Image (tube, rainbow, N blue to C red; front, side, top):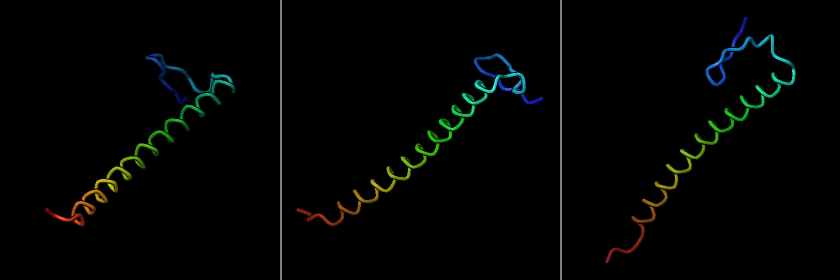
Length: 62
């Protein structure tokens, strides 16, 4: 029987109410979206650094 641990307490998934399982699915979707957004942010930060470095190379040197 699949189990999940929340706040240190283990629960049988099959014994949870449909509403509780729906909340769990929503929580998992949020966690996945947060992870995806963090990965996208890392990509954008890397691109920003590259653009800033390219800009510095193009600026006149005094």
